[in-house]
Image (cartoon, rainbow, N blue to C red; front, side):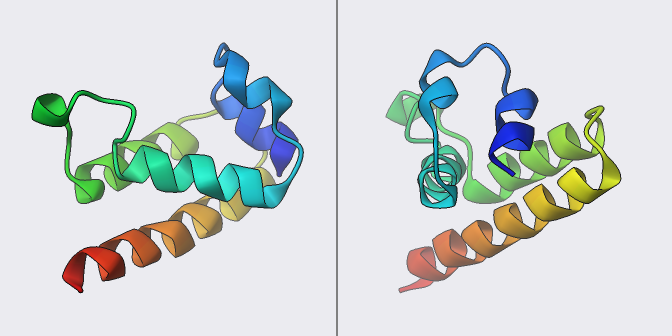
Length: 86
């Protein structure tokens, strides 16, 4: 999964150092919250989730890798969306 995630986001130097699934989940969580974007330009977590799904589905990853990443993104999206409801 680590390899697939790094392939999906080639060119992001910070992701080259990822070694665990927990680190991937932290990056996904931050990505879904759009924490890397200026507050006034942030997209909703729903939109970020949709963009991630499109990126995964349109990638050249194997179907197995796509399935794994889609599952992880879904789990993290549910955490983010549930946290926003509280």
